[in-house]
Amino acid sequence: MITKEEVLDALKGVQDPELNKNLVELGMIKGIEIAGDAVKITVALTMAGCPLKSKIKSNVEAAVRTIEGVGHIEVVLGVMTSEERARLFGRAPSEMEGVKNVKCIIAVGSGKGGVGKTTVTVNLAVALKNQGARVGILDADMHGPDIPIMLGVDERPLGSGGMLLPVEKYGIKMMSAGSLAGEGVPIIWRGPMVNKAIKEFLGHVNWGELDYLLIDLPPGTGDAAITVANSIPLNGIVMVTTPQKVALEDVRRAIGLFRAKDIKILGIVENMSFFKLPGGEDSEVVDIFGSGGGEKLARAFKLPLLGKIPIDPAIRKGGDEGRPKALEAESEAGLAFAGIAGRILSECGC
Image 1 (cartoon, rainbow, N blue to C red):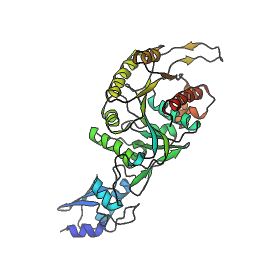
Image 2: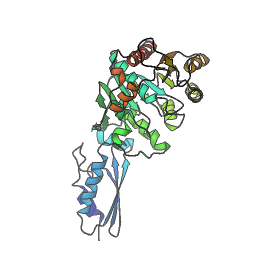
Image 3: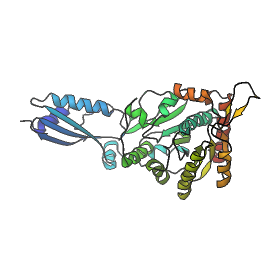
Image 4: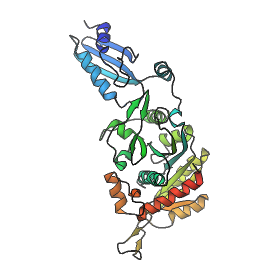
């Protein structure tokens, strides 16, 4: 008959890869259930987004499988409470611990998917960096975390002292659920898990000293947007739209949400604003999605129109290849993003 003592003895051989102590000694084993030849173990990770969780899980399974008579093994991963982390590391990070040295936190949002909000976030971050700012991106779009693709990031974040360290590319720090889950792995989280993950990215990611942390929101006015509005001391939000009517109507709703929370709207970016046919400076401009929508919306809400981004295949290509077009500062798109960054620098002064 399998006993809990045998399971605990086996687990004493499993170390936390970061802390270099065994899971039993660290108090990470929260439950052992035995039914015949089946063993269920509950392990409490130091943080929800632990980048080493897969390794810990496989090591636990391998250790328990060495016990004679074990057939089925189930490993359930949980997360330590703030009090447990405090006992382990000496103190528990507050919800805002990771961003304590960030001067300005700016969200980039929209009311509708497909308007290029993530493209704007990544290129705006590069444009701010080009103008001398220290910049990070928090990818709050948990179900469509595309920031790693657009920055060309394929490595996973590391942990240190109970905190995650953001990945850095082009001088920009980045944290995304996409980097934690791995390429092609679906993130099947409901509202409470999304809210918890966003708070973890603020409290348990060591962002260091930044001038700007851009938060790439998912479209709409759901859980992630509400969590950001309620829990993060935002210095402002940039709204992204296209000229077409359906996008404008959805952005109106999103503006209403943030204004209801007394969050400052820094202005509107009109993406996919126009397409210039090949042929030089005087070539014909085609308004594929209509024209003037962003300007009308800005006037209606008495907000500045921060800039217009053209439809440019090179912007799409740069996103697919992980090399944002704004890195080419003198290109038409690069100059457009630079203008938006300049207005944000003037407005926030961080």
